[in-house]
Amino acid sequence: MENVLIHLSKDRVLSSLQKRVEELDSAIRQLGICLKNSPTEKLKVSPHNGTYQYYLISSETGKKGKFISKKEWNIAERIAQRDYDTKLLEQLINQRTALQTCIATYHPEIAETFWSEQHPGRQKLTQPRIISDDEYANEWQLKEFCGRPFDKTDHELKTARGERVRSKSEVIIANALDHFNVPYRYEFPHKLKITQQSIKGKYNSKRINIFPDFTCLNKKTRKEIIWEHFGLIDDSSYAQTMALKLEEYQQNGFFLGDNFIMTTETSEHPLSYETVEKLIRRYLCES
Image 1 (cartoon, helix red, strand yellow):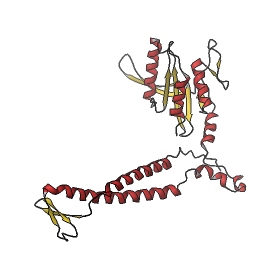
Image 2 (image 1 turned 90 degrees about the horizontal axis):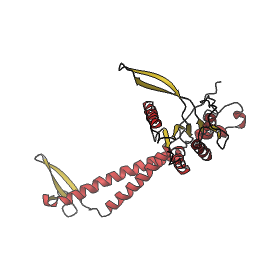
Image 3 (image 1 turned 180 degrees about the vertical axis):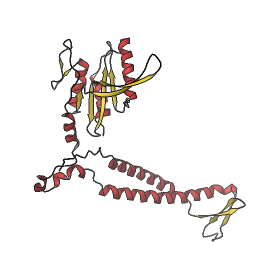
Image 4 (image 1 turned 60 degrees about the vertical axis):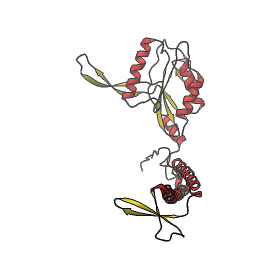
């Protein structure tokens, strides 16, 4: 039988349900406070000449009720608001109960742990269909690829894990990624579709290979994020090339703060480890 792996994205349902329950708890408490000093009388609404008349119903007035003049509409408003709040409170409590029941019976981790809980004899005959985040990251990291070759004039710079890179800033980024256990591929090839305007005014599209500095994986969300470092932005020619490159990324669905990270530096303002760490914590370690 073919060993088909089912890749489930990171479960966000449970956390969303729990957050919703917290919001409902807060709303229920607020409504409870509002209803604490609400009036005890009842309100009768009667159509009258295209509008409505309101009557106060109490033990003293009987079923017929006492007519509420416009000057006393604040009484009718308070009773109507109480009735609305009471019914809304009931609905919110019902919603909370339904969600709490769902939370109690919903166990997303079972998808990953189910195989390991099977009889050892059956495990010998089967392969897990769903893998954990760590297993997924390991498979992702082991993918073979051909990166951009180095020139003889390129510096011999190595990361903590012995990988060759092109700049000291890339050493900083790579080591930080490794420190936070973020899987990455250095200069992994991607294909981009770019559109250029010819001299005659026509637009032509073509596909090109690019080699971003780092292609990173957020293990918790299993989302790939490209990280580009631009190290000479005080050079006007370099800055123009950077602007064009950013435009090409956007044309292909890579947007800053979503699936694209960038860092920059100048000759007077080098890249800092603190900046790199903040970006990693924000985009690559989040759940």
